[in-house]
Image (cartoon, each protein chain N blue to C red):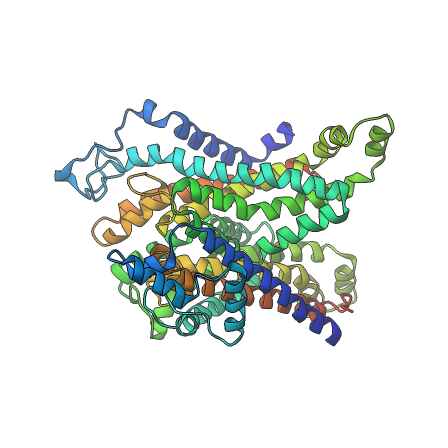
Length: 273
Length: 306
């Protein structure tokens, strides 16, 4: 798989960017030595300069420092949402697909109900109930993504459940749990990885969107979507406040999409573009 | 076919009931008494109790829900907590802007997306193809609220061609429609491209060329018709994206639409509006999905609903 992925130049670039942002999220503020909260009031909304290459925001904070610090909120929020969706979606899809019957119908009706709303609006509804905040928003987005994962996993399980190697495992005495874990899960991993990577891009965008609307991260958290919202009143005098975080957002999601496409091609050589 | 449509329409009833029950219960268990919210800070206990009785909030939950459904069937969705105006009226007032915006965005996205995707596939590996693939990748990765702000700062501030925000003249529509169309356009172009590529490689297309048909006829009659089916699926899926994107777009351009109404209601915890808006969106969404399913049967004679 790695060999195939390495040959895909776009995917390698995507992987590099994602790794870079992940490093920023994990260690950024400690390594860069920049202070995201220090205010220089004399330099409010100052344009890019040698001292602050991305300029300063309306409160005189260094935009570069804030973007670096914000990576952990933007990527962390997205990862939380995707992980939540996968952690609940995968087992539900597997159980439904493996056992079928009323359990399966119940799970499917549940996904139907969630899919009755456009997912972003469902996330808004959940945030309306639970109150705004970055982690509430991440939870809401994760929950609304679940039906997608349930459906894909279930479909994959249905296609391998009757395979001989699964029956063989059952015949030599493997329990349901073991058969599912060792033989079924191994075969549905590929679509899960691809879906998760592309889904992460969507989740990052959704959380940034919620933050932009004031329903996700709250000031002074330097989440990138919120930073764009904070810059919208300075479009005329200081567009860099809005442009820079949005550019980072676009780059991260673009990289995740490139990586997802590359993984899909690498994991399933039968597909072609 | 008629029987199928009737059955699908009837199937909407339990769905809408389930959605409304979900929304009703969800908003009921949230902290914060609507009566207290309506009366504000200086509410007396007597006043709250009186309003609770007036709103029927002192009745059992099931009775309240049944009452809500019966009233909703009469077109009465209650009063907004904030403005005290009928929810149904507020929804009707804001629906028009969202409907115009969403429809135009989808039309633009479908027309441009299919054209661009088709050209890209037929001229594979040309510079045009690479350009289209770049635009597609950017489009599906774009934070649309950021795109909207960029468009404003370029085409409304730096070069004042269009108004910054607001609603009413045709000029007000242009930038929001571009913003909202970006994502569906990219998705539709991507699907059209891969779908056309697949059809172009098929035997019947080679046959059509071999028997001497001109490329216009082959593309129009053989390629497009067959490539259209998977594209329809993607177009259908875009309705959800557009309804969601409308909230962001309306916020960026300060448009008086359903999304703005819902957002204001969420920030003000105006549950009556939230409930009505979500119900309306779910109903619209379900209807659209039904129409998309029927469109398959029209486009692909092999699909037959009984």
